[in-house]
Length: 138
Length: 232
Image: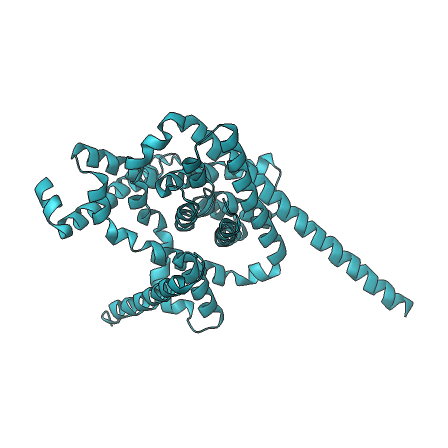
């Protein structure tokens, strides 16, 4: 019984790496640059929607990767060692740009969602009133 | 030990993985003990690892060669982002229009604000192309940055700073801008501060967390498309 688990993990990794492999191949033959990462994400999404792959087939691996996402980016962050010189003189401005644009982005997104939801509701209500009135006239 | 690092690739790989994992564990422990969001495990691990490399006089190219073990996982990590989106597909279907328009407007706002601020402060081109994708999830940010001719490591740092700030400020931002709708809250948090902000959206509620997770993927895709469309 305990032996079945590692075999499932191998199968999960085979599915996932297979998708990555396919994505890299597709990215290579694409006429314009499209990151293989994103192609793979779309590919997996399509496979899940068409039920070719079920979430159970990759559950353990996807949970592991999603929960430990931050860890795998540490190595990329260490490249700061070499590139810090580029922002050394502008650290405070750099920070300000990051923080300020985050606040603006938050507000723009939140208000847009609220507005679109509101418009959708109004249109639906109008439609409902219209059909009610028509039903009443008949 | 330095001789071994220079001569044995396997030793270098073990060394790099061990240093990253060990410093990350220290970061997690410190974060748990103090409960301070500013003591972000990822940030602590990056800082401590750089310190160790400098003290041992190991240069970055040597480290990068050994770090392949971790870098290879960057593709599968983005690919599995499809799983939470698929799991929350009912929420996506019910609110598709507000979510997509919201994340789209947010992504455009983020890029335009960064562009204008960089112009205003006369930031050089290499740095601002690296900053444009700072609100999206790291694997997408790296790709967009490379595509626009930026420096991925600057993008990563900007993404981490944005994420930490977004996570810390999310409850305050919701109160300040008087955002009560759970979907609006979630999409806004995910669009402006990706996975790190999503952690704090999950604390606000299930709907906020789900929407934030969804927004990471959508904002990422929209940013990719924008980067393809804009001839910089």
